[in-house]
Image (cartoon, rainbow, N blue to C red; front, top):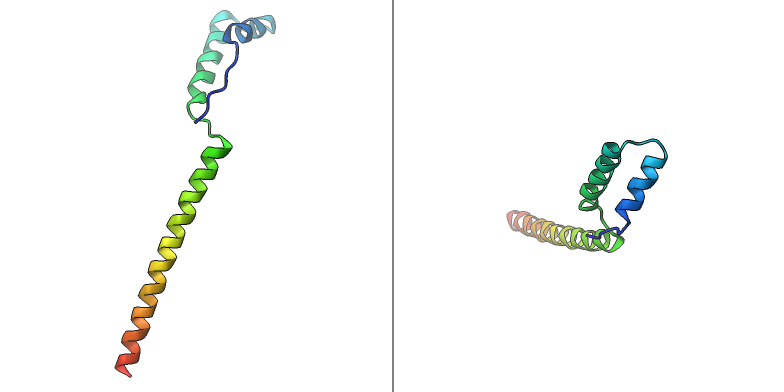
Amino acid sequence: MTTITFDTQELVNELETSGFTRQQSEKVISVLKKAQGELATKSDLHSEILELKVDIVKWVGALMLAQVAVIAALVKLI
């Protein structure tokens, strides 16, 4: 995951200038810092998609093998 860097003191000052109290400004900063840990970058998403594609290919391959086995069993019964 990535971290966004910003000047928290500057943001607190800007919030206070626009009418926020000091406590409200600090709470906003706290929420932003907490949310940073949950952000995903493009490369994070790309690697997750690649993992999912590999899983899908594995499942499709396994299902194809199972289908071949079932067809082979049915052919033997005929």
